[in-house]
Length: 438
Image 1 (spheres, one colour):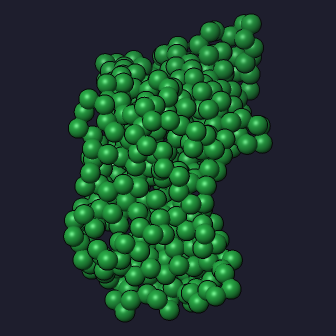
Image 2: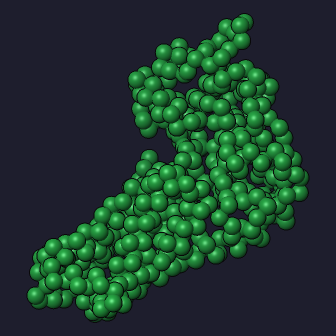
Image 3: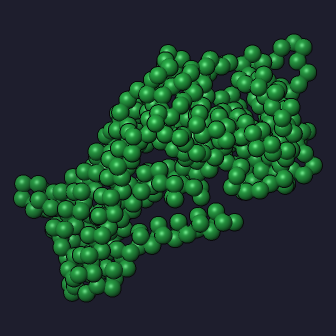
């Protein structure tokens, strides 16, 4: 319940910050002869710019913003609200041109004031930001190229939009209006400086070194990290971090991975990573001693947020990594609440952590249901894909008193959530987190 109230408070603050420029605009001195449509145009422009500026906070991985919802939810909200903000910004000149066609001459950069042209360029830059985000893969942009363009373009667009607003100057008259926008601009700049300068500088003084690279089943590797000159990183089981490997902490080449180690041992961090792309295919070639910077912990895929009488974990493939962190932590805590794990894999030979899971059954009240798509001939366990019927056969009688953690491919997550809801499990009992941020 505490997280619910905190989440509602964060939403209220966001709405207040978005609407404050409009409220001050309405409370300010009335300028005669402006008309309804022009005022609406300006109001939409203010709201859109305010929403775009707040994006620096939404993408800054501030724990206070992400903890109630999960960072994946915040990133998806960032993407959705960007589209709404862009529509507001697009309506600003559209309404102005439709209500006063004579203003079309302001679009000519040869004759228009610089601040008008700055506003036009800002709008075009925002359009490129939206299009490059929606069609990144079709445009052939890899994540790092897109992120570099996205960062510089966002700062440029917001700066030009502020210049445009200062140039218009109709609504910056008076100490309240001017002071408000100065304060808003300063907070945006501070957020940007913290994320791009201060935070990397802090990380630079908290490096880690690779202690071991352990080969696991199913083309997976576990990186074991030791802190260099510090005690380590405290995290909650189920969380993740962004790793910057063998690069500067200012680099845009960083990747999110779940902790797979016990949260009871912050002096040694472990991340289990499967070879799924260009970067992850190089993990096995890393060597001991390589420097790593860790940005974390992040995420709300954690059992410590609420107290339940039991937990059900449903993992597919490398989705076992954060669940291993939870199980290892529970074992180190001597937690004897009943645990049930559904673990889906293609073949028995691909079951990562198979032996350790068997050992954990001796330390925990843990039942494991292995599910194979292509089982061996003598297999007597579950096979195929995890569905409602399969879940119903194994879920405990007190299923409504359990919390459910689902981790795996997005398609699997969606199918499992629908299956659980068919069995009467409430959505608030189901936890999941994906790294599909872009």
